[in-house]
Image 1 (cartoon, rainbow, N blue to C red):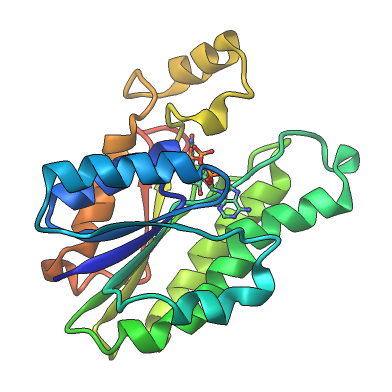
Image 2: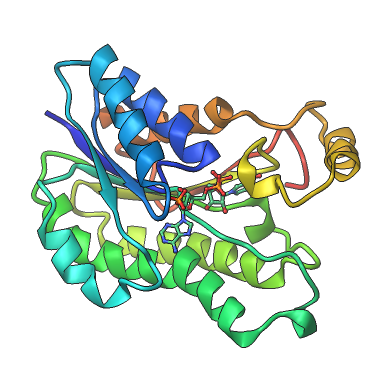
Amino acid sequence: MKRVIVFGATGGIGQAICQTLAADGWSLYLHCNNNVDGASEQAQKLMTIYPQQDFMPIKFDFLSEKEQLSKFVNSLLPVNAAVFAQGITKYDFLTKQKIADIEKIIQVNLTVPIELTKLLEPILIKQEYSRIVYLGSVYGGQGSALESVYSATKAGLSRFSQAYAREVASTNLTVNVVAPGAVNTPMNAMFCKETMQEVESEIPAGRLAQGKDISYWVKCLLDKNSSYCTGQTIYISGGWLL
Ligand SMILES: NC(=O)c1ccc[n+]([C@@H]2O[C@H](COP(=O)([O-])OP(=O)(O)OC[C@H]3O[C@@H](n4cnc5c(N)ncnc54)[C@H](OP(=O)(O)O)[C@@H]3O)[C@@H](O)[C@H]2O)c1
């Protein structure tokens, strides 16, 4: 049985990733932070559709439970893959942001994923083949004003994964970033309708991405046959920005 842990399984993109991977035969850990009910409901639904696979909701706060990372990883059944689809941002001028908020963005988006990667590696490389995918962003390739810290974390993920992929390239573990453009999810709920319409009008493909536009590429990178693709950042943006 192939099993993946999807961090941020309750997010707009995370939910689509879980649906796509479940349809592709994966058993899942559905990670959440606050939305325990959402993760449990999603697991129940998938269990009904795919009764031969396992679907386990799992809660872990990348901020308040940071000291428990080893315990968390040691409690897992073996996994073949990890997908990091959690993430937070704050939209404001840098001078208006509190230091505590800046630290939170860096921790949730970059530091904890790197620490989890370190702890997961011994488990992953024991499998016949293994995969890591981080959700980056077009803003990791081209910084966005008012999201400078977020942009920095996404750029950090791209360079981290490129370097780390080279460290583990001789094993069966591939490491990549899927970097979306603008996706229709709760992360963009802070923007008014007019702002989102303006963004949409700038996207050459003429529309925002849906979750499944992103989850398709995560599925491809997790496939057994994608073993020669590693260290890459793949921009999925409808031709926008990058
Ligand atoms: N939406 C876009 O336009 C877009 C564009 C480019 C890149 N991305 C990236 O794609 C990924 C998914 O985005 P999304 O739009 O699906 O986001 P979302 O709908 O806002 O979901 C965010 C996810 O992160 C989890 N999370 C939040 N704080 C956490 C914490 N302290 N510890 C652990 N998990 C935490 C949430 O868990 P709970 O629900 O349980 O609280 C949720 O599952 C992110 O990395 C984002 O940066 C998104």
